[in-house]
Image (tube, rainbow, N blue to C red; front, side, top):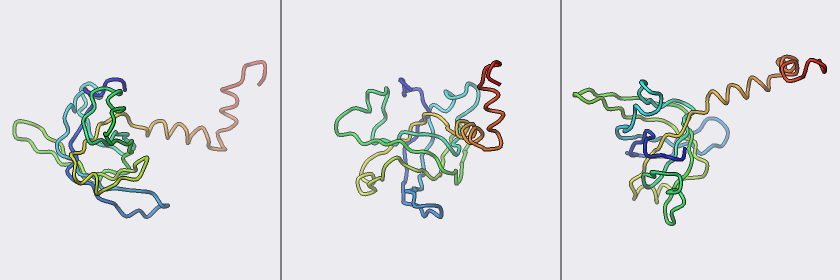
Length: 155
């Protein structure tokens, strides 16, 4: 995460508040322009937006983590909460535009955001971690986890 310049990123075309049927979460619909640096994430796999992707939403394109400490710049962490559509065009260049829902770490001032160029910078996907966490906390697996964590003398 130290170097952000090679992470997939896209300029935000629109961001709007989205209705949320669950809890009282701050959900937003985001539409991005074409993704750049798409091949840098998983080697040969091209980047594609997935549920659980963690991004930096910023009013600038940071190159390194220290850029996030600049005074006067707005940024927040957001998590993708569902991909609405992916659109690919192929005219000698493959382009990918995305529409998806995001859950930000703090409320987004849409008046402030609407007047600036905004960028989404991909960091990681938390879905595997979430699945592991849920599996470890299932009550029916507690005996298995205890056996795996204890030494042979204790079991």
